[in-house]
Image (cartoon, rainbow, N blue to C red; front, side, top):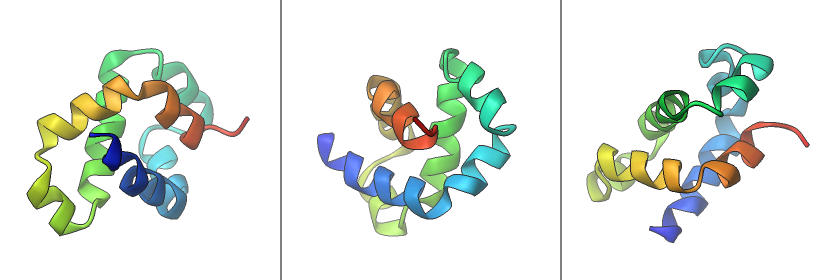
Length: 81
């Protein structure tokens, strides 16, 4: 599932502002990413933004598990250093 990091990075690069706004802004996102349910919300928003062919190949529960397993990398992409 490591191959999902490339599409995830592309989604975050293209839609970072939309993702952050849907999740309540940067401050709320930073606090929320400590919470497993909030990370699942990030996965849900990002999954909807994936290209259709990727969504056909990877179902949402698998993608959610991937995001949870790579929480630190996803957080680093979403939040400025």
